[in-house]
Amino acid sequence: MQSSREIHLADRFRPIASTASELKAKKSPQMELLQGSNRLSSPENVRRRVSGKSSAEKTPQVSRQLSFGREIGHAAAETYLVTRLTFNLLGYLGVGYRWITRLLALACYAMLLMPGFLQVAYLYFFSSQVRRSIVYGDQPRNRLDLYIPPTNDGMKKPVVVFVTGGAWIIGYKAWGSLLGLQLAERDIIVACLDYRNFPQGTISDMVGDASRGISFVCNNISAFGGDPNRIYLMGQSAGAHISACALIEQAIKESKGESISWSVSQIKAYFGLSGGYNLFNLVEHCHNRGLYRSIFLSIMEGEESFEKFSPGVRLKEPRVRKAASLLPHIVLFHGSHDHSIPPEASKSFAEALRGVEVKTDVIVYDGKTHTDLFLQDPLRGGKDELFDHIVSMIHADDSDALRKDEAAPPRRRLVPEFLLKLAGKVSPF
Image 1: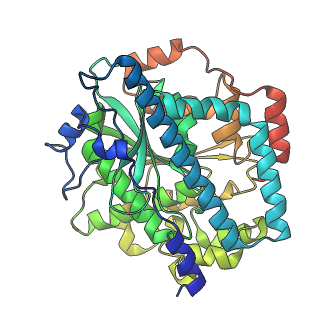
Image 2 (image 1 turned 45 degrees about the vertical axis):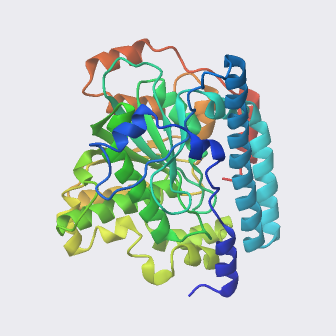
């Protein structure tokens, strides 16, 4: 059971309410579509931030000022949310030597990468390609961001549903903005899911939120130009663990004939990036890295829940074998120098998957750390093995898209090399 202190702190976490502009905005064509044939099996009001059309009395200059004001207001609200969660978290964890040193290292790391973060943040808040804070469920933080390709050729686009990492504590949908923007440039729609973090929620809440977000995308993405038959699920770090749990849990429900709102067959492949899939192996490792055992047990709902939320262990259950046959192609990526979650986590998960005859690939990048693959390499620009691998798999059956990928210009560098190297040295991950 949670202590009264935990319950009190969980109550302090509240989702930011929709702004007045959200409530008053007129319905967009996408919303009208969503409320038609593409709506969820259980009726939900699909709300999102839209800009209403100017009335006859408003001049273009006034409209631009109002739009800019809304953007600034949204940016301030998002910043407030992250700041509030950070301070609440620090109050919960307490201020010990290990946390202070890691917090200082994280601050230095962020400052060194700030030139890139500022460029990405500007695009996140002001780019017309980003549809922010689409509500996908009725729980706190049940929102997602959509990254739409700049080209509109009338063709349905492949879709990546991305679950961000954050040690189950500081995950946030905007952490996937760099990936979303870069994949959108390759004609791929990206949906970055937000979900409840600890202590606002525990692991079952996180898995449930992820499943609701996947369901929303599967049932509604065609309204945004996405192809419901080409959906890929991806998670990074804790997000890889959460999304893998959601995928296997859905396969189990489907194999039992239970009522479902989305099918595992709609997922063409699963990409797990730097994930941990066996809680029995992670608990002591995380404790030694600063995520103390008592907190880890609270997040995972006690040691008695380890098996349920350990995909690598659960696959060994005889009753799960039928569900395993429904799983899509699994591709696991990891860095050989990842100290936050060792690459053995992906290797052992792959062995468990192959043991139940699930098509599985493991790709380990030599010399790469926990954040190299997801942050430093994308900020570096140019060629990126992980990015190119994911894009080539998504476009494998589309010869035109593959030709465009070959002719695409190299990605722009966002951070100078010397800052990236310094960031790598001070990184707490």
